[in-house]
Amino acid sequence: MTVMRVTPENCTGCLQCQMVCSLTYHGRVNPEEAHILIERDAAGYRFLVGFTAECRKGCRLCANHCSYGCLVPLHKEVAANG
Ligand code: SF4
Ligand code: SF4
Image (tube, rainbow, N blue to C red):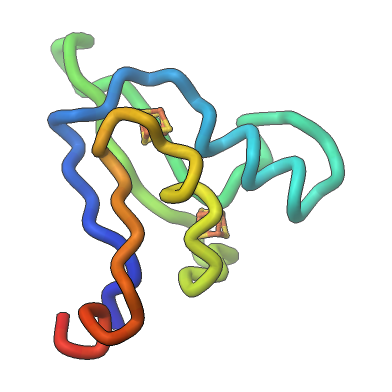
């Protein structure tokens, strides 16, 4: 089930998503513990977006805190069709 739309081209590397995820699930702000992965591509100009196996995909907290349109939470009705 798709719960958010991901557009890596919009990612700025701000890491807000990782901060909110790690704070919520590990009690501290540590991007390395987040369940969303933000990495530079080989050329170093863009960002790649991925998720770990621990990601509770339905929570969408990361998408709710992305200000750049990279992660956009989908409403449940839309997600059910997506
Ligand atoms: S996905 Fe959004 S919140 Fe996360 S690093 Fe990229 S722009 Fe920032
Ligand atoms: S959906 Fe939830 S658990 Fe998964 S990366 Fe985003 S904030 Fe973390």
